[in-house]
Image (cartoon, rainbow, N blue to C red; front, side):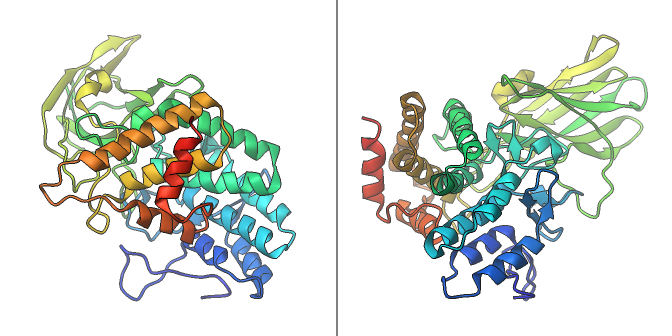
Length: 414
C-alpha cells in the first residue's frame, strides 16, 4: 500500500515487484468494510485516474505488464478494471450509504467513453477489455460479460438512464453476435473475435513505399478503419498492433488482424503478393501460430491501388481463437462464459428474443463441457469455482450455488 493505493504482484511480473492494477484496485475497494476509511481510499483511487473531457474518470494500466496486448506503445484502459471499480463504488454506496452517486457517475462516464477517443466503449455496442488502437478493435468475451454484470449493478442502484441505454444496446449486440464466439470444430467458445497474423509481403517492383491495413466493417453501424503500416519504435512490440516487423529489398513482414466484424485488406501502391499460414489449433495456445496451410494471394488493382483481400480465405483462418486449457491447467474462460451468461439471464430483464439467444449459447457451451473428449487430460474449471470468483468480486451476488443459478436462468426463458 502506497499513499492509500494498493499495489499488486502480477503473475507475469518479477518476484518481489508490485504494480498498480485497476482491477486489483476495484477488488480492494469492493472488500472494504463500512467502518474503514472508505472516503480516504476512494479519494486516493480517484487520484490515480485520468480526467476525461466528459467529466469521467478512466484508469489505465501502467507500462509494465507483459501481456501480449500490452506490449505496444500505448497505455491501455480496460473495461474489466473500469467496471470493477464502478461495481465496487456501487456496492460501497449500497452497503454503507455514503452518497457516492456523483463519483459512481464519473466512473460510469469513464466506462462509456468512446473507443475512438481512447476509451473502451465501441459504438455503444461492446465494452472492450483491452482496446487496440493500432488494429481493428477486439472484443474479449469474458471481459465484456464481466463489464456488463458490473454495469447491471450500477443501473439497478442508480437508475441512470444513459447507463440503462448502454446496458441494453450491449445486450442486444451480445445476443446478435454470440455466434461469432463459437468454434464449430471443437465446440469451444472463443476467447475473443480477433487473431493476429504475421504476413510476408513480396514486392514485384521494389520496396513498397506505402502499405495500409484496411478494415471494411461487416456490422451495420461500425466504421471502416485504416492503419498505415510502419515500424513501431518501442522497447517491446505487440503482435496485436498492425505494424511492419521486418523489411528487406524483396519483402516486408507485417502484423495484421483477422476479425469477425471486419473484412481485412492489405493495400499497396505497387503490385504485391502475400504469403502467410492459417495457423493450427492447440488446446494450450492463445493464437494461431506458424503452422497450418500456406496461403498465397496476389493483389488486384482497384482505383490505382493494389489490394489483397486477406479474409477472402476467412473460412480457413482463426478470426478469434478457442478458449485454451492453460489457465491453472484448466479451461477457465469457456466455463466463465457459461456462468456469466447464466448470471445475466437470471438478473437482467430483457426482451424474449435477446434472452433466447443468450440461453441457446449457454446451453450449447454447457453441452460442450459435458461431451468434450477429455482423453488428453483436458479439464474445464468448475461452474462453482467461477461463481465463487464472481461472488468474491461482488460482480454477481444473487446466488452462490450453481444449480440454483442455472435453474433460475432456465426458468426466466420459459
